Image (cartoon, rainbow, N blue to C red; front, side, top):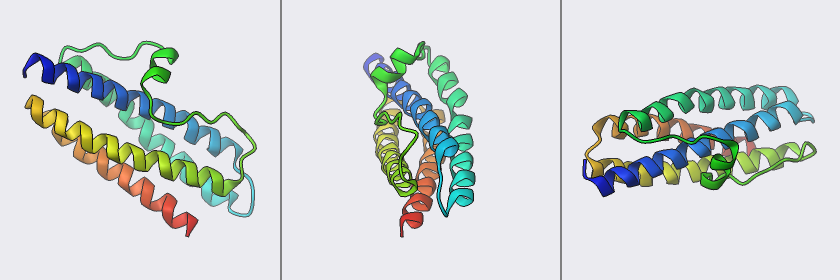
Length: 150
């Protein structure tokens, strides 16, 4: 792995880590605060999505460490790196929640496709393979959220 390619990959993985942590928290916020006629369905879907997202956090961080990088260290470092729009409201309408999560997951798909290119440039086959799985997960979440919106 060349130094510049490796640095770019580490930076990209840390951005992905930040996005996962921010999206996990946002999804849990919506899980806890969703109301309305679709409460049960959305409450359960948001929880499933949050668990899947959180399940990748340690894998991403350990990937950074395996390629001799340093991971994020604080909430501040997460906020500096994430592309997930902050949302602290506990009073959004249910479909606004779904719409925001759809957009956030769609953005994650774009980020993952960019990261795949970085992994290929760095010759990191292990990261490249993991990205395929993470992309499939984010695409499925995007699909479920988009289908919920109709």
